[in-house]
Length: 150
Image 1 (cartoon, helix red, strand yellow):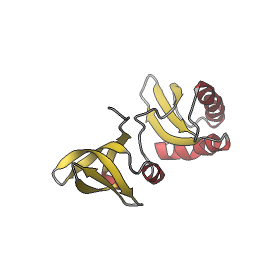
Image 2 (tube, helix red, strand yellow):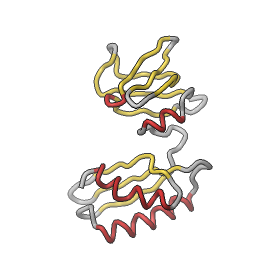
Image 3 (cartoon, rainbow, N blue to C red):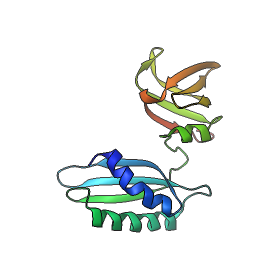
Image 4 (tube, rainbow, N blue to C red):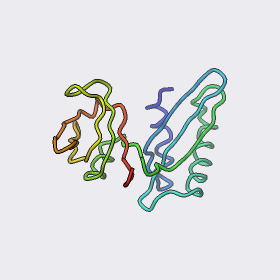
């Protein structure tokens, strides 16, 4: 089962509990793997939230059995340096500082650190040292918020 298929399976359960699945990391190997879920809600995440989602998703995965072999399930909050993975995330954090790594060079560079000025369904605009750079969402490898003072 692909990561996208796994996300489609577990996301409704997480949303029914009142949370947003902000990221899903799947690392499967011969001896065991890892499913790491990152969840969020407007007033933040605490340990009880992670436990609640972990129990619900674990029960779902036990019934559906979509992942072969042994694996560990981790549920965590996005943290201060949260990953931005969806258009909605970029729109929510316009005006914030972020670090972006591109899959391929854009304008001769792969890394950008600056202020997220705008975003739409296809691109984000990041201002670095007073210069705006339009970055296609499909070419972003990773994008993370930069905590204040970092």
